[in-house]
Length: 141
Image (cartoon, rainbow, N blue to C red; front, side):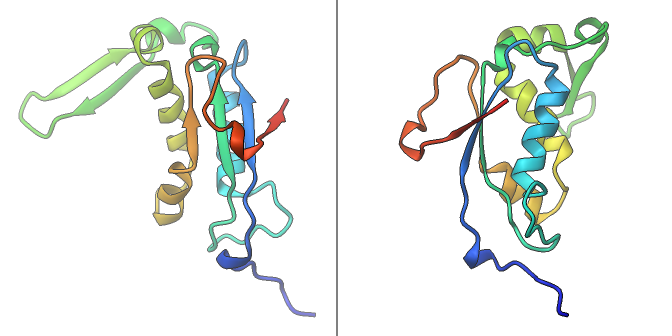
């Protein structure tokens, strides 16, 4: 019996909507990363991009458990001497909740070409409306 290997040209992609309101940011990001990578599909093949599209709504209403709002920081460096910038997650969730969710999902995807390709299929919205009604997305619990 031969092993089935999925081919990228034979993959049909669906759209999914995940509502982050009242749910932990990490749990929502983990569910989105699984769908983006295609690991929920029975024909998942590690070296083929089998993932699907994900829309995350209500990113501003996602919660961080414990003391993460005060203790967790997002760090980035400009590349210059003394160029380390740090932003507290309380500020990040207040000003750019989409960025906080995107960073969480991006960190859970593979750090290679497949992960980069999967990341382009992620759409995050702070509110409860999105622009992808024409794709007829399926709502996930």
